[in-house]
Image (tube, rainbow, N blue to C red; front, side, top):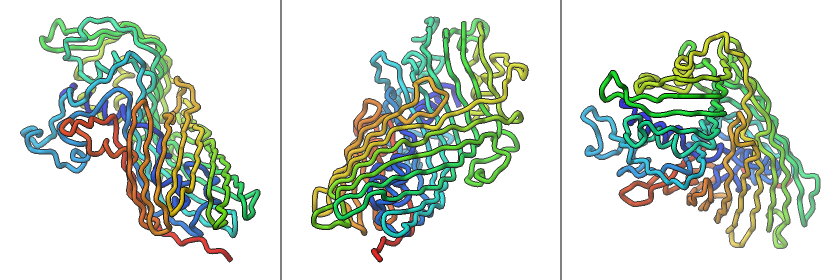
Length: 480
């Protein structure tokens, strides 16, 4: 695989996404969301329409960014389902992906992006009489994110070192950060109403999370000066000349050791290099319907989610370096044979000449702490209008995964048997529209429909994509 093709794939699949996986915007604001609603606001457990909800499994994959537009002649959905026309395949059957399939939208400002998967394992929510509930959740989260990156650097990554536009142009890059984190999560939620009558209900909820860090990494650039140069010895070869670099680098090698894989079993694996605690806390206020006190005319929710961090402190698997380097060279072939963030970090470490003597062996990676605000208005005849704000509260240079801020308005048709929602969201300076359907407790949806079907052929050219689905067993809450 050429460096150019590798760079294109990494740009869109690694440096893409949007928010850190507590979205599910077509399902999570609903009182029929079950355990999916707890990630938006743990107080919503006390508002659940289900007396019993068992999540068998749910998952989400999400891509978005504010720089690259996907403009291949085939959609991302076709790429995932391997339904790319033969005219866009190589002789060995591999899909052809050209640099121009990622269009740049430059405005001179620093860029941010995220990619994640969120797998929600067996989880249980049970109502305890009127106005109280308990939940137990399991989850596996994997995220890669870049923040505050310059357009000049991303252009080099997109086009590869062979693009003559970048030859011998000195670049003093801005202070960007790259963060990755993969961890398992076991959560306990308690929620209850502190005020409850026929007119209103005020509930509070708390989720405490035990975290098992599986693999993580970060690169915090404090100053980078670089050039792309032609190799004077090997004709047609090019390299990245790093003139100066001041940075912090940390990563784990746990997955490389013995070829381990990522599963929910890591919740109980004592060899994990990371440990931590997290918490969500929220409140919910309902103004009851005049016609039916079992439903609300208005529900308001405010929560602070993902407070906490994971500490990686295992001498066997954890590396952390302070970098002050000059005159370092990266060849165009350095990354051709690597896979995964741990192997990429090893290449960087070797090229920079870092040794075990420079390794402090520990770092802390923060959770994507965010302010969650939600308003749900009953319009009538089963129709609702939901407004959601997720606001990142982490500093832009933090060693942490961040929740990219978003504002969403979601019209919903809601009954116990059927739910249909159309999330309309502004995120990363881009408007996206989604759609979801729920039949009982089973759901399928996307927060970015155009991202799944968009391509250069239909001129949609999305900046990301999103899909989620879930399977559960549930029974409605009945009054005594």
